[in-house]
Length: 486
Image (tube, rainbow, N blue to C red; front, side, top):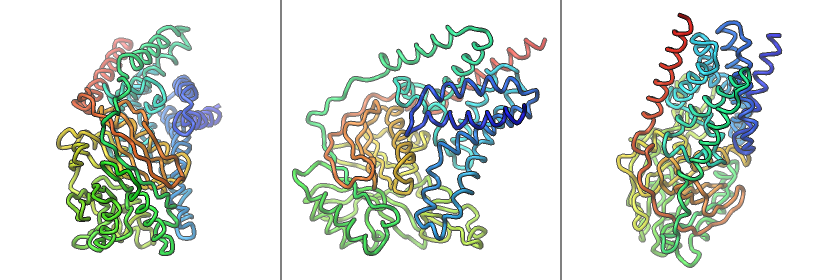
């Protein structure tokens, strides 16, 4: 029976992952979360509950993060052997957060509410511990529904808490035959999100227009000397098209030169832009350190603003304990040097003229809501450049896009997103895509950028409101458990 329960727990984790893109099967995620909280009641000890949580997490992360296999196939002969170890190791490691939550929750109480609250705590910890990895948070399963608008009020961790509490209410209702309360709570969440929190469609007339350049350079060809001129010229040709927009944006690492050698390339870009400012991604070197950077070019092709990516991808852009791993010839997948990229000083704003001030986000940085909230001042627009070619052409880019949408909702800000292989888009402050270039297509689109909304509650409080709610919920569960024991 123990073997059956553990196999079921892992299978339920895989079903729960179907709530994430590209499937977006909300009903599957809800059923799986309710089922695992019902299943854990058959565990006789906290240790058994930890096994249930761990195996549920392995099933979830193995399915939802399967795109992690893709970067290792870019140079399959050299790194392909690492792929299964990376996925299994990542899934098993992240699932430890859930194992701890199920263990502690069961120690506190035999009701599903205790596990739900500690589970939400574990998801908050996952966003911060060891530089954090909040990819695929539990609350993201609502991204295709009006409930997603609650991100603007209570943020991703508040939505996660509401999600697991709803699952706990339903699991408790299965045994007590009390379905009305969780059904009513779900109806209120959806109605309030759709009616009270969803802003009206933005006014786009007379708004500044941005041109999104998508070269569609597959990662295995991106740095091939035979293909580099093709992809560069493709971007130049898209830049030169008339009528001219107010701003042109190229994706991450779009220029094949280091910054100090890019003068001739910048002259070509400036000639094609014919006076329109250009934002682009490029790599640079300074004092032996390499940076993944974003620069703005003026009408003469001179760089006038610089931003260095500060939240780097572990094992991708830098290697923890680089010297140790180098002995086994294991280097960062996207690294230029043995130790990888160096981190920039942190978030900063850049001036985009008529579009106002923008907060640059390079690729992975859009995954972190706390990074966006750490801006030195409130921007007028969010600007993400990325190279999702690393993630393949299926689940990874779609999940990455989903999280960019959530950052726009949380901040009440429009978001400009330019991806090498797609999906490039402009997103309004409610998370609606105004126009987009799909995956795997080279091209450009000119899109008006809507105005920002007033600051949202989440943009003011950040994760502190969710943390307070978690502490209150934890205290309530602990207090009720003590009363029950006495």
